[in-house]
Image (cartoon, rainbow, N blue to C red):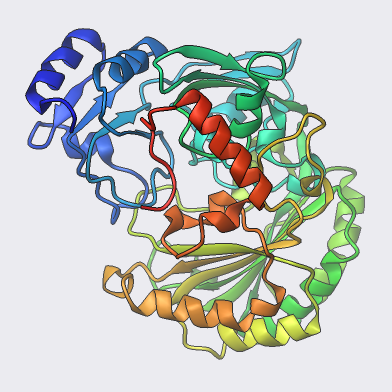
Length: 454
């Protein structure tokens, strides 16, 4: 660090309302804990900010010291081993103006908070699939959710950010104030400063036709092939994904799924429920249904469509974007991860994109991968002994098998901390990457907020 740690701690404890902790202090590990319990951070100190003023005080005091930000939700994907980590979990203010349909969201909020508050006004945010994910982290990377084909990415609905820059200045970035920074924050992810709040426009939505349907292992081949063909005909009002799950024989798993390999097709349709049911009929007819959870549902329950885990756990994942799929892809994909393959992946998901995802906002944004037609996302078995060699090797085999369909540009929220060589550069076209570097140099000229591969 550029400043003596003890002197800096003493200075910050006088300037900041939140806790300032070093290794060995009570609460240090808890302050840094994220969703992935296998990612353990060991910075020189951690500061829990309570306001933008706190963040500005940290930047002013810590000259020459790298600063990283840990929001709430799923957290950072790779360990931090130096400098300062700013945590934003105490910034949990949330307000909604039903007249303007704008939600003002502080950096510590998760999507479940916003979904519940918006529902009281007949509104809904364009959020991610999990209500447990932090709002800021998702939006900075774009944000694919269960309504993506209908409404676009979460970042498309951002109307402004409050940010503390590398110079310690509190600024507002929107379409008219600091528009270059506004462009970068919608999809450019990190390295610009500390985002302390965001204003997001909500949509009028109270119900939808959605949920998930499960099929047993013998049906997986036919269901996946039907799903791929079916997605080519869907209107933008429908968003869907298909996930192969290898479920453990544990009591918390519903009995019909316990210990089985299954495929679940998720579906969200914004429109008449009868039309949604009609659209989904080819999937129900693709095999014998094991569990059917599809029907008209309140928008406030949208996170139940994917039903992602909510409790912190050891976790390993890989993700990328795919171009248009076909029968040859189905052969390669099922040959790699189908029910007959012994692979240590608890979940392998295909998510259908296109529609509104493919169209940028009028003023432009830094989101990478809008041209991708599908996502491919793999979650490894929760066994840390597999994380260093076994799971990366299996993932490489899977990715090699579908290389022909892999998109040239990925999207940053799938890049898992840039652990793979070239994964950072792959998240944006070259011209976007260059423009992001220019914006970072403008608002953080000293490189106070390091970002990218190490």
